[in-house]
Amino acid sequence: MAAKRKKPESPAGAPAYMVTWGDMCTLMLCFFVFLLAMSHIDPYRFTVAASSFMNAFSGVLKELPQVLITKNITVPKMGGDEQNKKIAVEAAYTMQQELKKENLDEAVKVQVTDNGIAIKIADPICFDVGQATLKKEFIGVLLQLKDIVMKKMPKAEIRVEGHTDDTPISTREYPSNWELSAARALRVVKFMKNELGVDPRRLSAVGYGEYRPIMPNDTPANKQKNRRIEIYIEYLEKK
Image (cartoon, rainbow, N blue to C red):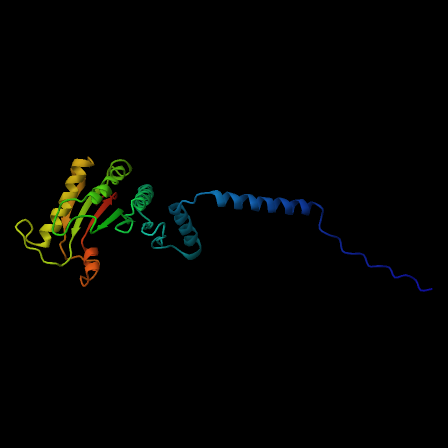
């Protein structure tokens, strides 16, 4: 009678503690995934942290890449007062959300620049054609600036620029588009002083007429985009 073959011994398995260790690592991973899912990531801090990694692995960056926070708000380049830049990002984001509630986000663009905040208000929100009287919708937009210019950025310089299309104008009050654009910018500056309580030493008005278009003046729609007011709230001190 043939002898039974002896089965080869199976290799020893992982130590018993490895099962507990693997379960603990899995639970820790799930815990941190849940924390990340419930957290609110600050886009500005995230961008700065990402740039640090890029500096470490790819050499020194000349500038920080722009990261889109909303459709029109971008993080500025590195340099200057980082705390003020964060305040500018938060203020611009808050204003953009308020504009969406009023359905004005298409006519009013808010963008963070290297020096502060740029707000571009297009027709027909600002003024009637050939006039320099503030419209009701425009006043509402300007009132939203009070919290920014009086509380969040109380020392910022504010420059208001007036722009027109290339349609000629020649009236007793406004002999050319230069006078019209300057009058519109000055009207905004006076409103900020009188109604928002902004220190007039922080304010300036500029009229560019039709000489700085953002679109060709070849269609009514493009002409409307060129008729605009631009407000720059700049926190960096000029050297």
